[in-house]
Image 1 (cartoon, helix red, strand yellow):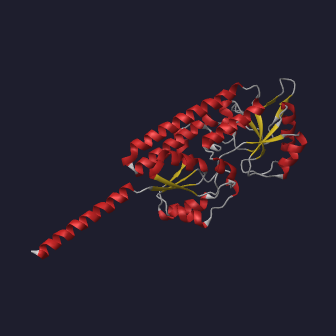
Image 2 (image 1 turned 120 degrees about the vertical axis):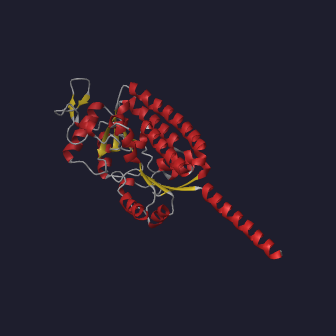
Image 3 (image 1 turned 90 degrees about the vertical axis):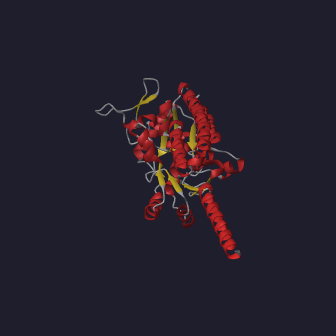
Length: 328
């Protein structure tokens, strides 16, 4: 009798342990690896306490000239999901995607997914580069853009999805993609993820309205260190970058055109990213007597921003306030 009782008790304990193990597996915190700050922030806001995010790119890093550390790649391997933008913007992800493919780690190429849901015209931007700039001095001090046979301006061919997280419309789509992925992994928290996404979307819509208000500004041009803000053309804002998309220096002839255009437009500021340094930029800034003012891409945060507790929205509104100094 005692033997039967012990066997019965052992079965109960075993079943209980199995149930607990399965339950823990179901409700365990989802581990998500992200490359840049906006992906980290959006995932944290939507996932809340049910998601643990690890940012693979270090703070204050320049994403165009960066290599993932061994520790970062190890963290990616331990994750349930990896989120990145695209190798065209993040060259360092070539090492990452190789590991993802080899080990069959679920991942999302955010740029590819956003493209499936949008037309590039949403963030299509004008950029005064590539030797195409001329200045029409007799008609209101504004640069003109040569037309191609199909009617398009050279500048409107700038990367439509360039730093796409800087455009609230693209950011909303990114958040929806993240929400759907988290729900696929943890369907029991679908209502929570949806509610968090809805709150985030409302804040992004409000941010979009703040950018739209800039379309009425008397000036629409601003000088930047590199080609990162072309999606803001949808608000009527046109960047004049001193370095190209990958932060390479432009030919001397093109730089001279940019200098002439800046003089014609009577611009006062150089919108500078804290982690980009170039002797050419310093020379142009000095020759044009431009005052330096920050403009952030948000790919990574600065140490000061982290200490101040800044986030995606506080920094984006800071960008808007800085732009107003040149536009008005």
